[in-house]
Length: 147
Image 1: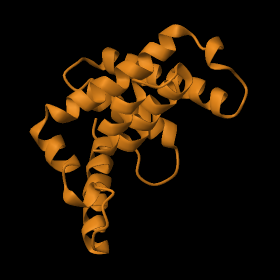
Image 2: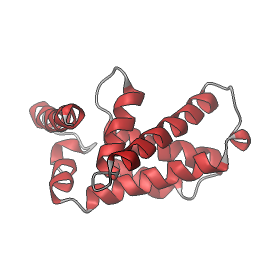
Image 3: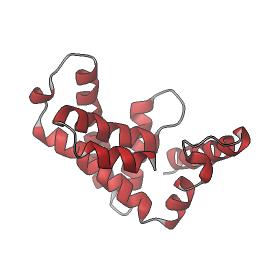
Image 4: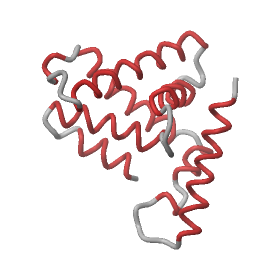
């Protein structure tokens, strides 16, 4: 739900905030924990968005994700202005966020995983939240280790 809200609200924001909102959509969907976040994020997006495509297409998605996040980092850390970012990279951020949400919404298994009540921002018992996070963490671990 959080990712859908970020996506929808991001569409009506000025370009800089909208771009960053799309990056947050991707982070919300594909990151849990710390460590090598960019690589994990790029691999997970490539596998989810490109799951029905060949290896070369997944590599392209992986590289596009890395380019989006390089631009995001330069903006967030004050090295670059949004106006200096290649328009193709901006389009990629929106496309990756949309394609990721679409892939999840159209996959019964992924939708069930992301619809677990423990994934909501609502206050719930700690064990329910932990079980939901563990399920997603296990899914990503299996995804990351798959060929």
